[in-house]
Image 1 (cartoon, one colour):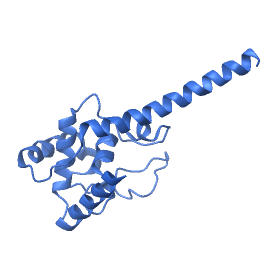
Image 2: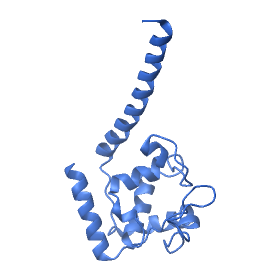
Image 3: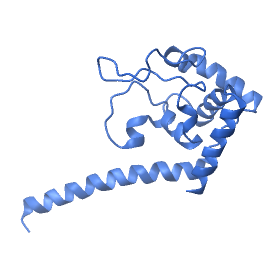
Length: 159
C-alpha cells in the first residue's frame, strides 16, 4: 500500500472516529444525566420562566409564539425561530433531544453543518438552567399536549 493511500485511510478513519465518538458521547451523556422535564415543579418552572425571558424570548417570543412564517426559510436560507407553544414542534421531541439541542446546538447534534440561528448554551447555562427553561416551556402546554409529550418520552425510553 502506498504512503499516500495509507495516509488517506488514516485520515478517513480519524474522521469516522470523531463523528462516531461525538454520537456516542451525546448518547452516553443522555443516559448519565437522566434528563426529565419537570413542568409541575413550581420552583424550577419559576427559574425557567426568568431564564426563558432572558435567553429565548427575543427569538421565540415572549408568549412562546415564535417568529412569523417560521416554516419558511429566510433569504439567507435559515428558518425563523419556531414557537415553543403547542402550535410548534417542540413537544414532538423527547426531553433528552430538547436538552441536548439546547445545550450543544443542532450542528453538534446531527454531526454536520446546518444553517440555523439557534445558539448552543453549553457555555452560558448550566444543565439545571437548561432543564428549568425547558420545564417552563412544557408547563405552558395544554394538558393533552403534555400527555402526548409524555408518551413520546416513554417511547424514546424503550428504544
